[in-house]
Image (cartoon, rainbow, N blue to C red; front, side, top):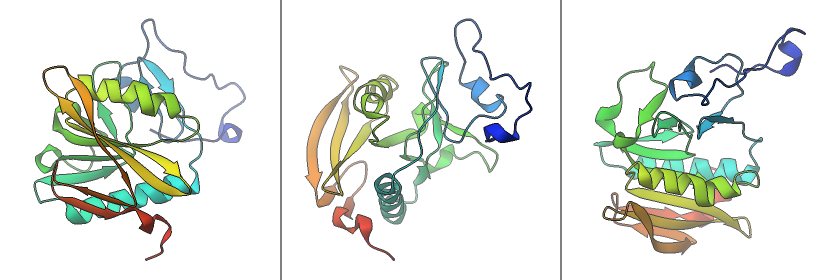
Length: 199
């Protein structure tokens, strides 16, 4: 996907118009001049607002901690899309996938069956998507673990969910303030108060 400012487009440029039935996951790689981090939800393009400092720092904290703590059979991805089905290709803020899912440097997405954890950091423009829409879609696609991150007094609070395979729905496993310590999908121990610390 390429990102181009309005001022860089020709005067006669026409923004993409969705085809009958909406866009598909494959279309996301072909459409010209899309802003960075464009997602596909229910066949519609979703353009995201600029990140806040909290959002950026929380993603960095989780990305670095998961990268450091993940066993070799896993790979950590930051702001990378996952194809859930033909009409849905969201971009979780952080994902953990099986390492053998990496098919090379030109890949632009993961497949849902390769993902073991999806993490969404809630922003003002994504509240409904991150709390309701995306968790339902991740669960329906069979992604076993989901974390939703909210801000409380400038610190991340992590809501942890695990998939019930019988109902294909997420079950709440806990709410974590200050420290996230889990045994699945692998042992994780993250100091959430470190979100604003420099190296």
